[in-house]
Length: 173
Ligand code: APR
Image 1 (tube, rainbow, N blue to C red):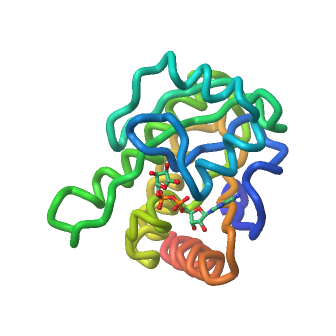
Image 2: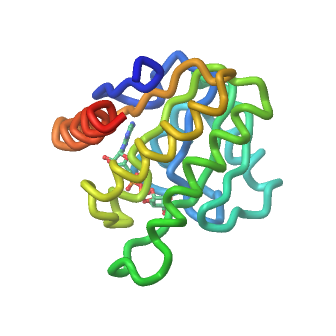
């Protein structure tokens, strides 16, 4: 699906309209990609996040991108993996869907995602990639206004799993 691309790189460098942030429910920053995005965007990002009063897992809130190349940041707290009996899969799908809905609402045409929840939240990578690619593909079929979704993988292993999930989708399509 030409409208989904998988790259290895740093999401803070992506020249897209919006980047998603694998945040936590306080929206007050953290480590991992959350920390990287706040460092790159500068202190105004945290200042705006403070006005949002947090965000429930699986939902998303939008801010400006400040010093980032991206115009917007889509903050979404992913689920922490607790074995799969706590709606983790539905919540992860909801993260991608919530971000894409906000992107459409704000007129974004290109969006970049990190691999939500597969870091310190320990969501199993193979399962997460199938959920991410599947959710994005269904959304893109119904939303031509989104021209490109780029999965930005920080390491080669993550990229391999996203590449495999995209191949499986294209073979099944
Ligand atoms: N660009 C792209 N991906 C990145 C970057 C970056 N600059 N930095 C890290 N990543 C990748 C990680 O390698 C991992 O594959 O993002 C993915 C998500 O990992 P985490 O950042 O740990 O996010 P998550 O598992 O969703 O945990 C969220 O971590 O940072 C805190 O505040 C955050 O509490 C929240 C939790």
